[in-house]
Amino acid sequence: MLETKQKTIYEEALSRGISRRDFLKMCTALAATMGLSFKNSDKVVHAMETNKRVPVIWLEFQSCSGCSESFIRSTHPKAESVLLDMISLEYSEVLSAAAGHQVEEAKHNTFKQYPGEYVLVVEGSIPGDEFTTVSGKPARAVLEEAAKNCKFVITYGSCASWGGLPAAKPNPTGAVPVTDVVKDKPVVLVPGCPPIAEVMTGVIAHVITFGAVPELDRFGRPKAFYRHRIHDKCNRRAYFDSGLFAESFDDVGAKQGYCLYKLGCAGPTTYSACPEMRWNGGTSYPIQSGNPCIGCTEKNFWDNGPFFARRAKIMGTQTTINPDKVGLAVAGAAVAGVAAHAGITAAMKKKEKNGSEERGE
Ligand code: SF4
Ligand code: F3S
Image (cartoon, rainbow, N blue to C red; front, side):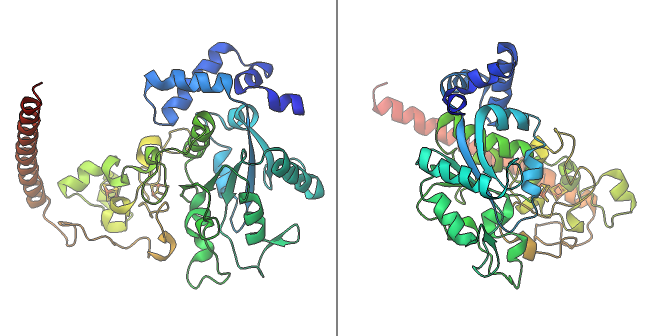
């Protein structure tokens, strides 16, 4: 057991019969998943050749286990590569083969053997002390104990990140997110109900590869996966811009694949990589399959409903509209936007030139 933990990630992969060629392919896929350019894949290769597997403790509180279910369906990288080659999963209520005292012992051994080194993954929200106990301890105490000596915390899913469905009004268990309990460690939020499998494996791969948290947005979400609104990359966006909307789930517009905004789509206010990465190995995502986005990566999405009624107020979509007029308005706005952009670019270039001259360059 000790010998296994001393192997590098590359050695671990070799010992499982993975060829050098497949190892390099895995690293390239990993770099792409992490949002790195192709030229940076050698950094991933180097990290995998020199870094040892990282011990991980995966705690689960008030959740449906959907995040674990999503994680094990990752295809790029494959979940088994992450679980067997890259991390050493010391404790997980869903994925550990052991149970009861055995697995509790493994968890406590990890605290002792790897202080400051292990990554703590949390799935589910944290209820009041009277609602959930794990091995006889309230959930909050279990989390505090595990977070005390961890290196980073990753919250998988909207429950651990924001409180999630257990925190929906009237929040009967007093559910809170991890950040309400853990204040003195870096916490990477990976919200979603559940998050996309490759986003989950991509985030943990980044932490392992670079030994640091990825660049985060102001809420603590990795920018690589949460920097775009669904609306910015949506496959139905051309219909939105042309003013073509489905008015009901079974009308002609719905059959034609028109925009789902009027059916409650929260894409314009939701940040997630769904249209780019998609689900089930890149097959589809809710909007592509005909369902409006319900904003499952956003804070309080569970109380922001109803899900299938129009919500965000965006100009030109509040009434039944004339598509021709919207088309003209959009074209006019685009022309104005291009002109404004050209003006700004010219002004910036002039400023740059003046600066160079002043510096004598
Ligand atoms: Fe896509 Fe929704 Fe935006 Fe329409 S409103 S373009 S369906 S994200
Ligand atoms: Fe969730 Fe919307 Fe994606 S509902 S799965 S963020 S399309």
